[in-house]
Length: 378
Image (tube, rainbow, N blue to C red; front, side):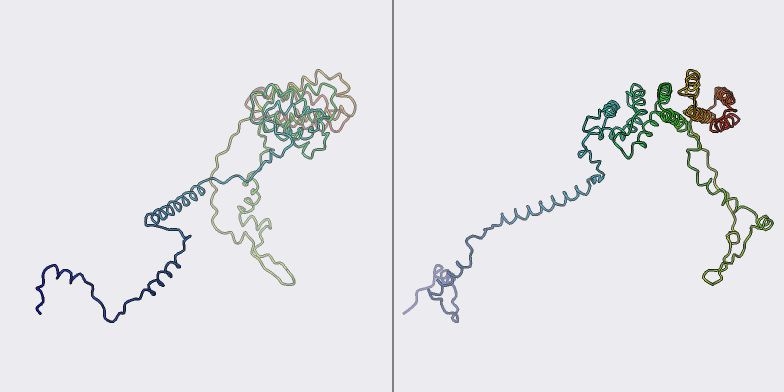
C-alpha cells in the first residue's frame, strides 16, 4: 500500500505534536488527584492575597513612613528644650502681685484674712523688682508704700522679712530718691520710735551711697589685692640684702628630714614686663544733683523739731543725734565727687552744725562730731 503524499497541513500537525519521552511513564488519574489535594491543603484561606500593584503600594507606603519618621525626628532635634526652672506659681495659694497697687493691697490685708501671711510674703518678694522696672505709677505710690513699709511689723514670723523689707525701701530710695527722702523725714517728725527713726536715716544714707557709687561699695580689683605681692617682687636684690629680706635657701625640718627650698626671689630672675595700661572707668554721680535737696531736708527737720524733747531729749535723743550727724557726714562725702559749688556750702554748714556739739556729754555724739569734721576737711 502506498502512503498518501505529505501535504502542508499534515506536516504542520506533525510539528505541533509534542515529543514523548519513552523513559517517562504517564501519570495515573489517582496520582494527579492526590497532588491537587496537597496543593489545596498548603494554601491558607485566611492569608492575605497580594498582587503586584499591592506590593508596590506597600513598599511606597513604607518608604513614605520612614521619611516621615526621619523628618519628625529632625524637627524634634531642632526644637528648643523646655526650661527646667519652675516657679511653681500654679501651686501658690496667692498669685504674685503684678502692680504696685497689688502690693499695697497685699501689705494692708487685715489679720482676719486667712491668706494674710501669704499675701505679705508675696508682696515683699516682688515689690523691689517692680520698683526697679519703674512703672508708670511709681511717683504716685512711692510715699504711700514707703510709709507702709517703714511701719510694717513682722506679725507672721517670716524668715526673710527684715531682708526683703530693707531691699524694698532701698529700691524706693534709689529709683525715687527725692520722694522717698521727703516721706522718711515726715515720718521722723511724728511720734515714731527710735528704731524707726534710725532705720529711716539708714535708708537715706544707703541710698546716697548707692547713687554716688561710693568707693566703699565697689569691690577691690585684682590689681589692688596684689599690690603687696607686686611691690615685694619688684624690690631690688641689693635692697633685700640690706634690709635682711632675702632668703635664698630656706631650711625646713619635716618629719625628721631636712628639706632645703629655694625662695621665689632666687627663682624669679626673668625680665619683668610692664603691665598694659588700663583706661580708668568713670561713673556718673547720680546723688550730686539731688544732694542739696536731701541734705537740707534733714537740716529743716532738725530746725523744726529742736524743741521736741521726745526726739532730741534724754539718752534716746543723744543716740538719734549721733546717727543724725553720721548720716549727714555720709551724704556730704557722697556728694564730694560731684562738680558743683554747692558741695562746699554743704560742707561748711555741716562743720558748723557738728562744732556746736563738740562738747556734748555723750561719747557717741562726740565721735560723730569728729567724723563730720574730718569729712568736711577733705
